[in-house]
Length: 127
Image 1 (cartoon, one colour):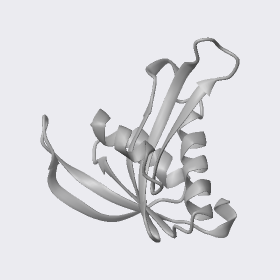
Image 2 (spheres, rainbow, N blue to C red; image 1 turned 90 degrees about the horizontal axis):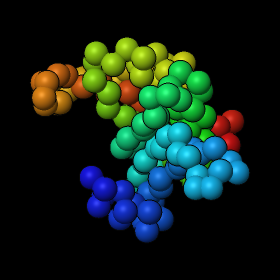
Image 3 (cartoon, one colour; image 1 turned 90 degrees about the vertical axis):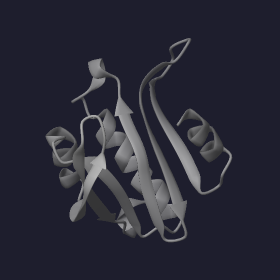
Image 4 (cartoon, one colour; image 1 turned 135 degrees about the vertical axis):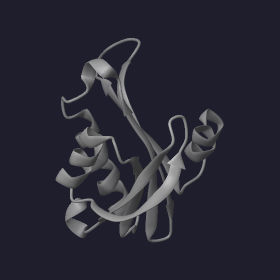
């Protein structure tokens, strides 16, 4: 997966955003988001926040900035998959305007679980 992220950083359609504490040397990474855009659609590949910084608005800030940048680049919709049991993430996505589009049976392994496919319609206000 790290190779995929490395390739995205060199692709104008991909982006890795990193949230960090400013002014620290070395920087302390709080979290990151990874996404890829193809024309008017984009997919969130991953978002993660260090456990000690969860539930402090880091993921929300990363997603807002992701949406802003995607909208500015001409994307109109952002898709993601999330485990059906990941209630905190689902609540976060709903709070930002994501809606349930579909589910994918047995999408995840270890443990096996369905994925919820969610979509957010990007609007110029996201800029």
